[in-house]
Length: 246
Length: 250
Image (cartoon, rainbow over all chains, first blue to last red; front, side, top):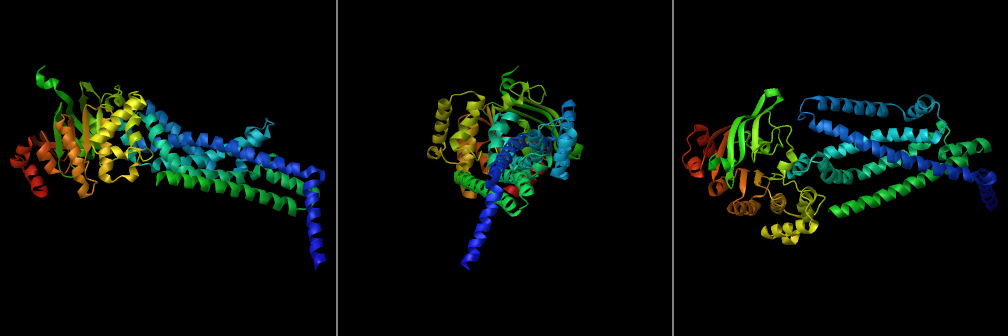
């Protein structure tokens, strides 16, 4: 009995040593974690930047379309809004992996900077989802808030900055951070364009050791730990926000 | 120019507001003058266009025709920077519309410090003076959701006053309040009127209109049906529509 358990443990230990210690394979995993986090953070920031712009374009149009005075300005705005709509539809209507491959093999076919291409693809993808989060956040602020700002003499942009955006951010922050967590997991397809993220590192190790259990379950455990950590952080933040409000 | 014309602070000429390309005529040719120091109360059935009229005065609602002249400037002109003029037209809403993410004090100082470039100390000094006036001095650090409806509306009034407006517009300021809180808001408005503030008030409070108004405007179906002193409108209405309306509400 004890022998069996001891044997099992030594087997696990051998597996662990083979997959992570031998030839310093853990370094590959570490690189993978670093790259996964790097892609997530930079693409996340990019997503927020794109998202804010697109959300403002879309919600401004939806809210003011009827009261806008006809003319060149309105015509141009209609085109810009149209472009934003096409962006949202295409990005949210096609698989992320295909977007990544199209970026890598078609749009940036001549570039060798795999990491940058991956970040760009994930950032552009995330931007579409973040835009919708921000847009619903802006639309959820009552019209009265906007009118109160304008009636005091704030112009459109000032009203957005001082009155709408702070309330909007408070409303959308939890959803936004969940999108960030989703992005963390979605970056696991970066290996398609030969970027050494955590999943790709695990599968490279598996390919060289012919032992799938340790690298795959190990990397899954690392993702889980990261996600749980960020979820905990979101919870902390949510409680903070609620405290200042009620 | 005679003295009377000099006194005109807002002049409304042939004001029109059509929705759905003219299917719905919320305002259909309204002419009115508001004089300095005057309290004008606008009454009328719901859907009569009285709120739309008020909201057109500071262009929250953009008229589809006619002009609004404020202090001699046609503010319906596209070239006019409306934001400058709105600073001098305080507005109070039915739903209070305090900024929920700011304290009472911040609600009152954000516009003067940002738009009038007043120092924080100066803006807060004025805010505290006004808070004292409406007996809410001790609530300066509270957030709007911690206040009752009546308190919120009194803050909304002094928030507008912080900008030193030339005229105050009230859009049914007591309609969203519990009955026991209506009085405290009306009291603030009355004291404001006594001090000579120019006010345009859309309201269902006939008692307030009778007591405080210099002039009452009765609107129905997008036009001014009748206007006059409270005595003329409430005791000797000339038009049948005015009589019908007053019979229902009094």
